[in-house]
Length: 297
Length: 343
Image (tube, rainbow over all chains, first blue to last red):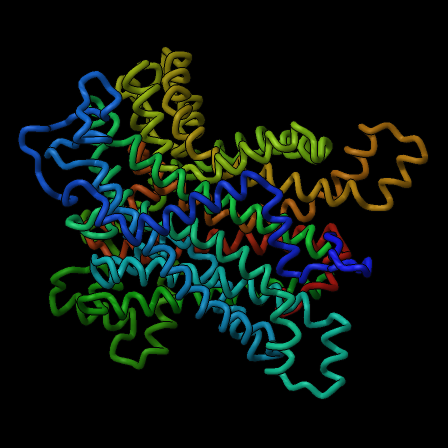
């Protein structure tokens, strides 16, 4: 604890949020993950302005160029080109928006609805809670990707539909996490004390329980982002995701599979992009989890 | 205890009913006639249509339709496929063994690799071994399974040519599918070159199994690590240490049996992740299982097959979670107080 510079040797105890943040900063890997995360957000915002070419511009004189560090590579095509002469680097930059950016938005929406529903099922008792729980159990039992696939099959392929499908598939997981967290806190003594003080359900939730479960929800959100990225990319890979004129990492990888023997970089580079972004988010999530555990004891 | 088991069974029935309702809703929402979607009967003649209306009570209200839908499905009538016109029930029986085979082997590999490593990390807590295991599990958990499969095909299949890249068995070996499990079928067959057939079947199994095993293995590692470490911090462990019991005795007689409870209950929750990655793995390695069949059905817009696949996969997951709950309740009295409608 830092000592104040005044004459009084007072100890300043950082606020809980600040303690978590300080603990988080003490894990170099987690901080690295956070940096990658920030860079990805920046790229999602400005990527299209930085990209050297439009994503689907066909360079007819530059088919299947390897990445620039390869002897046959060309510096104009930093990460090489595919069989139609499209620049992989530009495609990758545009793809940050669909794969990474979309998964961020999707997770936020899913978190919003999932947490609200989870709070309802967690705070309620008796029949209402039991009905919500059975619906939750049944939806949780359907694998999230399978649910997304079926929803896309029903509603047709488009970026919006893919996002809705992945989001709907994520909601039950948020519900479960919130429900468990709320249920864990409800019988605690400080909650009972607040109730005895005459707080109603809404006050109990917002002023008493919410500050204590916020950490669990933040960790769940980071986990959900990585699941959303993998789900969107998997849908793209199975060619039932975002339709083809949009750049998407999973679909790029699927295109590359046909060229795997002559141009392996078409597979490795998009895959690496997915891997790095998911790893970064998992690192941040892991750092947060540990920081919360140690910061709050 | 029976009270809890009966209660859990009730929960199971209700959850399955909700699942059937969701699938029923899906069949109503999908484009096309409900009679066609629910039975797979395309261009039905008036006589067939009348029969379908009778079986599924399509002239009654939605609740009767829903009840008769459950009734038909439970008796094994899953309708017929749009594309093959075969009864879906027979197709499931044909494809399910391949998926079970793949999943069981992958789970075994995951347990054999993940369990000792997780234990090691828990014992060596906050030491290099712990960080190594943690790093490996974080990295393994972040690798997209389809990328890993494709890279494996590229390197071991195409570049080194060590392993076959698709299917379950070379066409040279004509094995009559009796059980559907390749290894058992080879054993049952009267083939002259059983040794060679076994080697071929194993070679086909290696890559899909290992690809599928990566994510479950990392989960087993992390769950084991957390659970064992929690137990090792408990007071009764300190008590047995001060009594002078050997570390091995403490680990295997005291800590591990108690750690098994959270490990088993958390692993059963991960089953849906395993099934999802199994589907993708099957597509990459052209493994003739349920996942491949289901994805094909989605390309073909084969609604009866999609609904059947959903029912089978989700039903299986619910069944496993209920069974693990029952086993845990039967073996640990501590859990009994916790279980009610909220579980």
